[in-house]
Amino acid sequence: MQRDSQAFLLDVVDAGEAILEDVRGLSLVDYCARRLIRSAVEREFILIGEALANLSRVDPALFAKIDHGRQIIGFRNKLSHDYAKVDHALVWGVIETYLPDLLETCRCLVKG
Image (cartoon, rainbow, N blue to C red; front, side):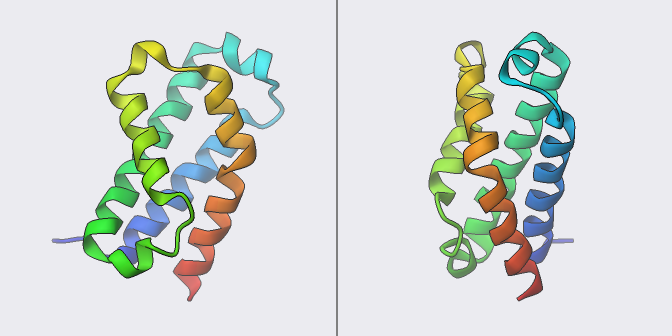
């Protein structure tokens, strides 16, 4: 069964909420020191990027409403394919700077 655009948006929301839960109460130093947390966060970002890549194919008009959608997919590719060069401070910055807005946008798109 093919998944629809709403399912991909919900995947983004679920993965993003998991990231925020995983890092709640941590500092950048704590995050960098905890390999399993970093791995979990990176995996969830990979899921977000994959969900958005699928959304871009299934519903390009809806995907266009997501700010930085192509950059998020590129971030997923970097995490997946250039894993040895992941900058943990950059990932942390994405969590703090871009993830809340992405989640808000996707929640609104699910409702609307």
